[in-house]
Length: 247
Image 1 (tube, rainbow, N blue to C red):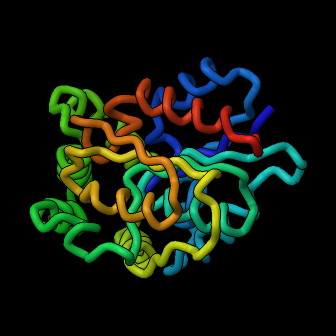
Image 2 (cartoon, one colour):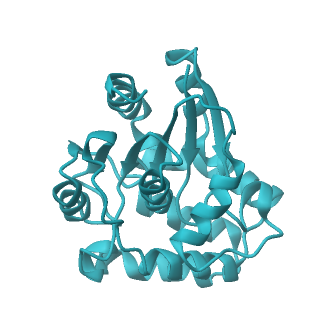
């Protein structure tokens, strides 16, 4: 049995996994799945987000099951940074980091200049509908799929509204992230999107080289790979996790 930890990205929460969680449980019935939220979002909307990845990792580490069952994370973007920190600490035994970036890449690769107008407008807009529509357009290359998920994402926002302050604090944390200097390449798989409109695939390439870790690239999906091609993500994630000597 494995504890499978799911971590979302910037200004997102557990509900944004959608059907991915159920699909994971079907494919990995012996695992216990934990969709954990970062401070300021989801189950912790009343909290203030730390401005460092280490602070975010402290929060997640406090939520991890305390038994000796192996723990593996599937983590997107900012969540991938947290997973890398947890892996370096030994708090988890395996990580799949999806479209993640770090300070070893220049800022124009960590957020593409072409994405800045839409993401700035989403952050500053007082309209939740415009916010979520702009985000979906930026992270999902499949326009039909993005339109289908807009009502669901608006419902999440209505139930547990994010604050701009916490979104900015998460941005600060992400902007400061330096990948830990540890040997963990055999415990790490990186998944990336060649057609990511938000973050350059070069970020995952550099992280793979930094850790000497396996990198698998999707040819057409956008930044939110678990939304756009969950079957592909699950196939490669579970193969990596179940093949690991530590799991």
